[in-house]
Image 1 (cartoon, rainbow, N blue to C red):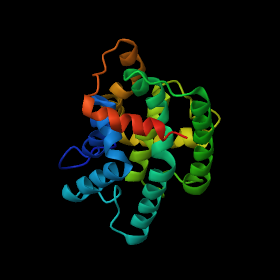
Image 2: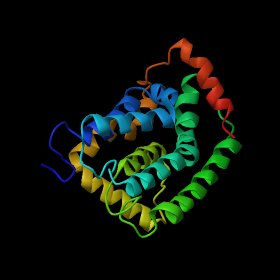
Image 3: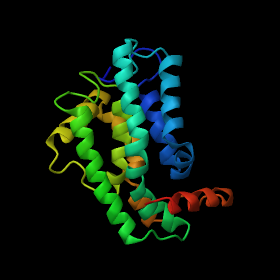
Image 4: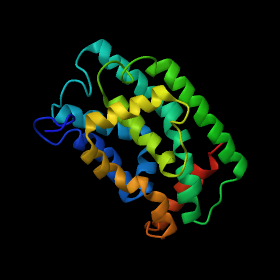
Length: 215
């Protein structure tokens, strides 16, 4: 088994795959779910399948650190790092253009969030909450790869963050990473080829509201 393989169900494939594969099939269901629901799903899976303790630790202090990050992630990462997908893929898909000043403002916000992330959580640790990979690392990795897929080099000039990414991907294993990240990393190509499904009409009001809320 690879470094990220665990006995029982294919966990981190279950944990990582559930979060990413639904997004890959269509970006809109993930947008509807939001960070809180995605987090709840991962916590549910880690409990249901009794995965290795590192993912969502039984130790209360260690679990509190994971929960602290997940709460911060919902407020500081999820909405901010999802904007490039809305601006470059989802908006044009429904005939909406996000103003350049909003895109530029969001880009600056991403830089600020990454700096705070490194200072507040990563520091000199191997992973976000300590020396073991957890749900916190999975949530962050999947979020950061969305703008990376659209040409943002988030890791340039951030050696700590780049080293963190390498450690997480090494833990998960190259085969799993390719399986679950392949579609999102090719999202720009899919958009150019117009192979992304057109969202259903009932999703449009939500999408317009989400775009309107971009600061």
